[in-house]
Image (cartoon, rainbow, N blue to C red; front, side, top):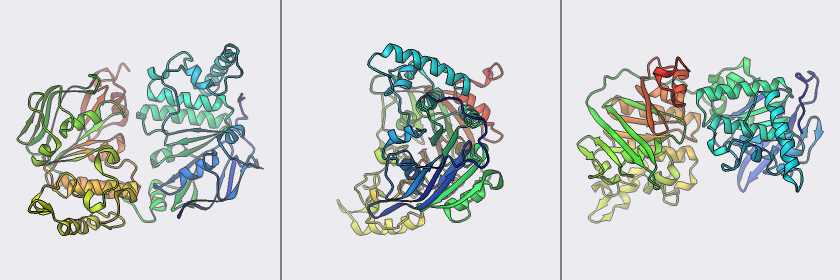
Length: 523
């Protein structure tokens, strides 16, 4: 089992990890090109880069998911052959994945010892594991109830279990992949405290994230990857988010949005007492009421899984309300009078779904056909009762470059674009119709920092033109930058609504955890 390490390794100690000349290709795609990276022992080292930059591939090679085509790895100054994750774990390398690898119906104890039970008889192994979980909790500030079921734990505590599981297996080098994507700000701050404690205890942490604020808050050094290559490594104290963004993209990036004043006008979207249930009859949205005016962005903040997806689906006509009403301009939707997505579109509402693959695109369709999905009955795309192939292609030829979709090739399959460019296709389709109401779910999920800048500008331009926009995002910084008002959801309910100007991320984080504004002083 892992024992407490020295608090501070000698300055001349061998690096915890040294990657030398790592190359990895997947067919014609060169994911890693001659990457050399040194990670100092007892440090927190950040790795940033756009999607497809190669950072996850590099860490997957280190953890044994992939084998490098060429290059070498040293762990604590000694050559290491890592053919699978068992080799990595044997060398003291652990990994906490973005999507947790836990069995929900098992207890904390059972998850931690799963795969390392210690023999055919479980009782002695359980006693040892229970004792070790208590020791790790005391040493690292990672206290857990070993008998609690995973399915009953909040997301932040589940992540803690993953870290304890890695330490239990002897990890001294811990890789964390996008660890705050499903956390409230308070949970993220608690994680940072844990990472600092790990560092103080002599552990080495490698942090993969796209959030530059987190890099600046918690890392000692940061390496930037672009196009499969390592382009820079900086001492965190000697850099800033603007420089890191420019290194990631290869050009200057505007990190702050320019949100011009706009006086909201008439209400164009409203929900009153809206309740939505899932296929099992469970209420996922509970008695929700709000409105969005022309020229206004209302953001919906909350941790994933708190009803935001069901809310968007009901507003878009995909899911009928169980109770309550929805008004979209002159369209009235109720349990007695449901609508379908086509009807919602005809009344001037666009919809950017949260999951572009499942609901936004047909991946085998070409870009030109993806750009007319949902609008294919419009006269401009038809010649009598047939589709007008020339009009469809001319539309795509105009829209693709206008929305900076790369490559601007109308006949390329949707599946062959990068994730960020797929998202731009969906946004272009909905925004180019100049909707009076726009429902947007996760507009920049899986999108590179340069594309994020362009998407934010487009959303703000629609606002300035008078569109009423409901924006659902798990990125609190995005909500606070773009929205005029912020609705916070927890467990399907609206916990509170605040003006975005002067909004406090600590207050919003408490609301995301279910603590209403009037209860926060007590909390």
